View 1 (spheres, rainbow, N blue to C red):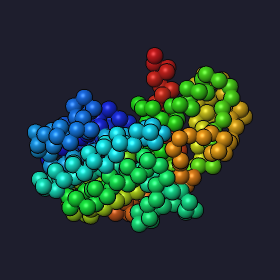
View 2: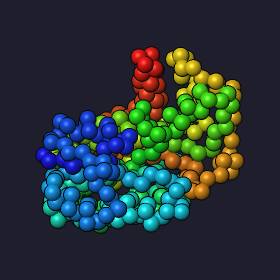
View 3: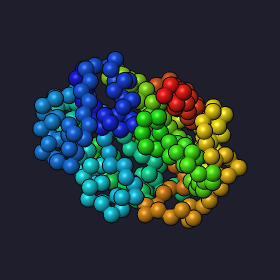
View 4: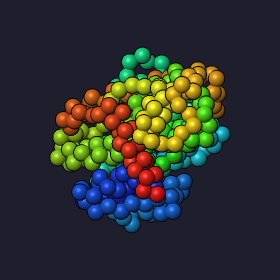
Length: 298
């Protein structure tokens, strides 16, 4: 199988380069290899590579900047996706695409299931929802995976930011009334490979699937967990959990509105694949152990 991976330099793209290898020949492109803001370049690149499977891990993820640069957000998260999906439909290729918990408004009390109505609060969320619709209406074979609070040792994310701030200052203030399930890029990439294999065998139908770790936490609780475990592992931090202050969303205003409840129910995909997805703490621990090992080796 000829696999074309887009977004190789992102957190998820980095991990997918590993997990997709057993499925076929992987060609991985980053921003320098494909400009998703150019429809002509997208079509030409896809024609040149003639993939059987397209895995689109590329996206505009600058949530706040999207509020003022909505055209760019929609070009990458919606228009480019429509072009890719159209190519997949015309050439009989399968498309794997990723979306976000931000397509929901966060007002539901329980975890969101795939059939819940989308109602994004931000430009970013609306652009990702438009990308979802483009895939769904294209007629192509597809797996669309919604995830949330993505992290990895390799990228810019909340956990790495908390570790940096905890090194630099003794006191932290963190939002405590937004909830989700931190999900590692490693886990998403592993599940993607299993999903693709099942889809090829017709054990997994086309559709949207929530793909997150299990459990629920707030940004504040996550920060406390990270700082506590990092100190136990020997990280040199100024901050400790007693100096992390929980605050309300209104005390940390940002240009883009965030959903308060970002928890997704991933049972549909897990049950289809026969998986038991781990609690969010498992991969956070793996990441911290990995970062500590690097520190000791440097």
